[in-house]
Amino acid sequence: MTFRFTTAGESHGRGLVAVLEGIPAGLPLAAERVNVELKRRMGGYGRGARMKIEADQIEWLAGVRAGETLGSPIAMLVWNRDWEHWRDVMAPEADAPGTVGGERRRQVTRPRPGHADLAGSLKYDRQDARDILERASARETVARVACGAVCKVFLGQFGVEVGSHVVELGGVTAKYHAPLPTPLNQAADASPVRCLDPDAEKEIVARIDAAKAAGDTLGGIVEVVALGVPVGLGSHVSWDPKLDGRLAQALMSIPAVKGVELGLGFEAARRKGSEVHDEILPGLARATNRAGGTEGGMTTGEPLVARVAMKPISTLMSPLRTVDLKTGGPAQAQSERSDVTAVPAMGVIAEAMLALVLAQALLEKCGGDALSETKRNFEGYLAQVRARTPKDAAS
Ligand code: EPS
Image 1 (tube, protein in one colour):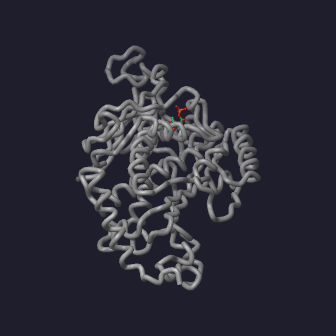
Image 2 (cartoon, protein in one colour):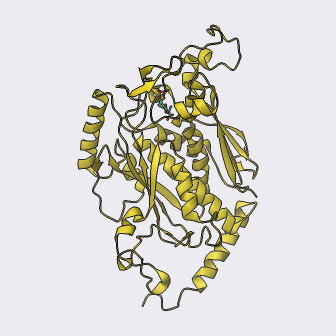
Image 3 (cartoon, protein in one colour):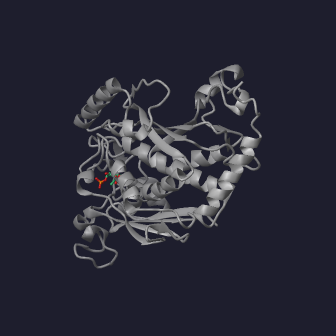
């Protein structure tokens, strides 16, 4: 069975659609399990007024019956409440009310540096950059989080748990000591910026307030973690099934993300081999997890640990220089309502992307049209791995 997902929808359009294909039949699935993730994504100190308008919830369109998946594509719909205010601007009809001389209200012709506005307008030959930014908007990640939430429920059946926390925001670095609290998200979600260090949290909130007052925006770094991942997901045999590469692509595709590290990441390049590699102990456990849970493009059985760096949001209330595409003359970039930071929300999106990659890799390993079949295959594989573990593991 092919595993894939796709999304459709514009930020101020009618709504967002998510389609996820490849989840086996028989997975117990309730809308609340998805909605709880959508709610988490809407949170975080530093979000703008838009999140006060929306109340993201899914409607099932397909793929679920009587509280269980059917094995068919799962389709979910999230309406945009804000669409009511944008009906004329976003109307699909050519002659929508408010269209004067073919031009819509709220045109964007002064592209924001850092956003998709300019490259998209040129590539797609659009006069109004709204044709680009409506889809480039991070609003699309609602649909990703919906698909990721289904994958989290699926992974939960195999004892895999995904969480995240903010490790840096606006230049403030959080201090925390391993091991991470469990459940990680319960601890992280208790903080307005999803940070485990209360001192850093205070400083981050202050920096967000200062950035807002200055009309500026802030970026940061999130750590996303998967616990309970079995050894051997992904493969070394070719470039494209390598799990580390797939994780990097999935996480890098999140809007505004500019860097992804696994384990020590860039720091590994600065250390000697003896300070990087994770020694193998009796019982095949590891002394450390500097690799971040992958070796040779496969999971090691240790926690998967990725760090994801997000640049500051490109809509600035004190705008940067740009060019007006209508006149060709210098101008100030468009400044519209936006967020000061969305780093806490990005952690929730990173969890979704990680869950999507892991669910696909687990299904590649174990297959199964029905959850019962996937579970049988999973147990069989774990038994095979256990049989390879030396009997005197504890010594
Ligand atoms: C975004 C701008 C803001 C954000 C939006 C992403 O929206 P608006 O222009 O409607 O105020 O709130 O993010 C979301 C709507 C969301 O759900 O995350 C942008 O320009 O990318």
